[in-house]
Amino acid sequence: MTFSQHAASRRTVLTALAAAATAGAPLLTQLATATPAFATGENDLYGSNTDLYTSTLHPTKEGTDYGRRSRRHEQFDGYLSKVGVYTKKTAVLAIHGGQIERGTSELCLAIAGYDPADANAAALFPTMVHDYWMFEGMRSENNRDLHVTSVNCDDHVARLLAASSLNTLSLHGCQYTQLGLPDTMVWPSQSDPKLVVVGGLNKTFREALVYELKTAGFPALDALSDEWRDRYNLADFAGADPRNICNRTMTGAGAQLEITEDMRRSLFGPEATDFDWKSGRIATWNNPRFLAFRDACRRAIATVEAGQQIL
Image 1 (tube, rainbow, N blue to C red):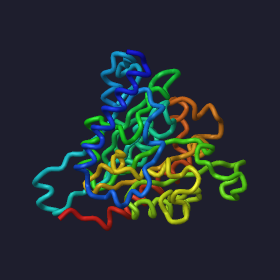
Image 2 (cartoon, helix red, strand yellow):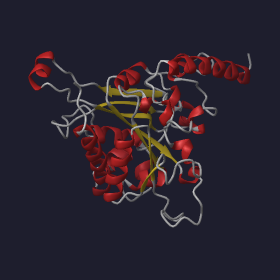
Image 3 (cartoon, rainbow, N blue to C red):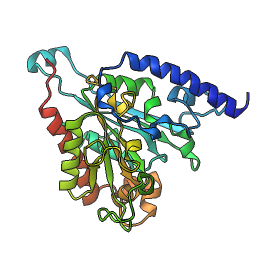
């Protein structure tokens, strides 16, 4: 079988499986007025994480090509019976971390409450930590081949964390030019293309993220708001498909950030080389701009969680 035949066959099977899965998903389809074209994964080498982990046509090896890191915080029956509320409501995801969409791993750990340079160290915020999962490209080149689009992310741990959480915040990277915004747009200007596109089906979460990021000085827009919905290429980055891993929560809704490379690069030190490799990023993350971005996201999470209760 040729590669093109293999890809076509795989897409046919995945389409059928996705349709069957969606039939049993939470009934929030009415909220997804536009299915993101970018989320179809037509340019992906692998049709799912399972495909990536098990492919014999394009084999990969964990620990060499890619790595996975996660943490799920324990909850004890005795503790829950005393406080009467489940306190870990949000999971933070970086499904294209490491060298795929650079900077998202470090942001994932930081927003979850951990040191990006040492995830095994004591939490930076012991009373407010979040579950997290990340898939990281580890190659010296061709990490884009490891990209699995959000709707096809079927890693068991990632799915478990999303399904057992009220909220997810999924972190992604993009290029400003992919968004299709006009050259005449005043903010942000093409000479300073730092922007965060906020998506996902949780409207309250999206609005909190946009507010906190903009208040902290980071240009952000809600891709599903009346102002931006279906304009330019933003629907491709809006996370509006119920199958998107960010929306596979208890409520069928979550949030995601598409962060332009210029924005991500600006969070790590003044030199471009600080951003290009993991060693540079973990050496330069602890600066006021990165911390401000982290804290804005954490404030948005706290705002959303404050209005939620599992009865």
